[in-house]
Length: 558
Ligand SMILES: OC[C@H]1O[C@H](O[C@H]2O[C@H](CO)[C@@H](O)[C@H](O)[C@H]2O)[C@H](O)[C@@H](O)[C@@H]1O
Image 1 (cartoon, rainbow, N blue to C red):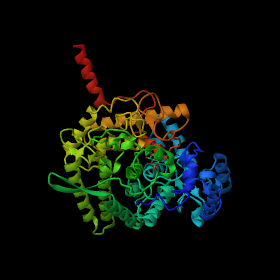
Image 2: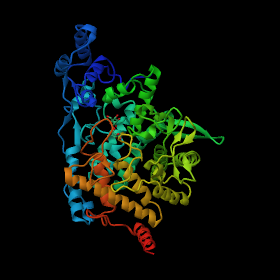
Image 3: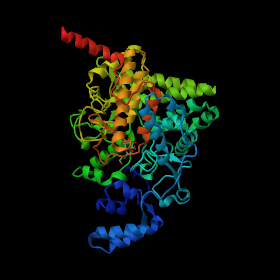
Image 4: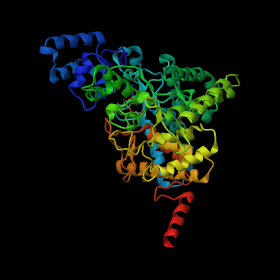
């Protein structure tokens, strides 16, 4: 009953996809669905039909499949022209604010990486979209790197923040224009720049990208031009990804990730097929939908989305039920979108700000009634099956601090105490994604750049020195991890391990990737924000953390 991931009978459904992926001709299922066609789809489909009709039981041997692919497909990557961002220039100003010479030299190297991650889509993709899985966008993009050859939605927020520090305003402008183009074409922004991603999104960061750009340029006419697309995207999330939930007799509306699309993810086809083996057809479809919703959350995959048969936040990947969870971070992000949209209307001097102010106030009330736990002092995901909160630690439990979506100052301070008592601060290299080692990449021991950034930024906005010191301490840990790994491997990674000295992360369904868009963006932001005090050597203990240590040492001596 549910539509396939896209309408292409080559890239998203049908016998070619099935046979090629099942034959495991490539190490990564994403490889095949990124290949360009050498002939129009009808010709390729009928050639495959003839080939499989000639063989008993329609089985095509791997050697025949290889031959078929070499006749009808090109290697991935041919859809790009070589492109160096024309606005890239040596020595952007922010470098001057980094006191530690080694970190300053390293920041300069990161700034150089934008040149290798820039891509311009070949005009052929615009003229003959039927030959490509690549989605055409009019302006060049900065990609994450490695197997992620195309643009990604939420990654681009941290990429754009980094580009703005690198004074690459035109490249940032073009990337935002691409997203506006995608909203106008699809009604929302796809997960990434491939047709197999076109029926699911990722965390909605476009409004915040525009906010970053506006803060850097103060360009009101740009703001006026893009605002209708931002509102269109907001309506998409409120129409297609919202749920009404009743708590203590009151009804609240909050958002979730939800992807009513069938079949396995084409880019991870055999993983999804194997995971669903043995399930009844309707359970299979449900699992595939929830895996896609997991991809839409950006956390693919994690024990955070597991709900076992007793309704507990427990189980295995097969028990992923993303759509049955109201996530704290998605709702904090939408609250921040609402506040930012209101502020845009105020800047432009029109009279539409009030509607967004009211939406933000409604959401804040809902988050405090449904997600906030006053006893524990944090916000927790809400389970729609059991109508209760999940109490595991995830950095997302503090996302409302980052979004500044809470009503009383004391909630912020309670959340700091929650974090300190959570056990998540005991690791030298950053805050883990959870405290569970599930083997999935969005779990312990991995730490991810966007989560470090949101946590550090949330803590740094709190009024207390204690919270600010903790923010600095976490920034120092993260920078040191990134820097040590760079010294060892000469590379920036998509994620890191919270243990060891500069260790890349692992787990999940693909090898850890290098590049890496959001890692570079977050490192540059932290180096800019804390450049005067960060060091490449031993961690400088901030006064707020030093004092408790001194007191406990004195007590021990007594
Ligand atoms: O191919 C598997 C999945 O890969 C992507 O997810 C991961 O990389 C993205 C790019 O850095 C990142 O946005 C996401 O948070 C990562 O988990 C892709 O976005 C998924 O849709 C895809 O299934």
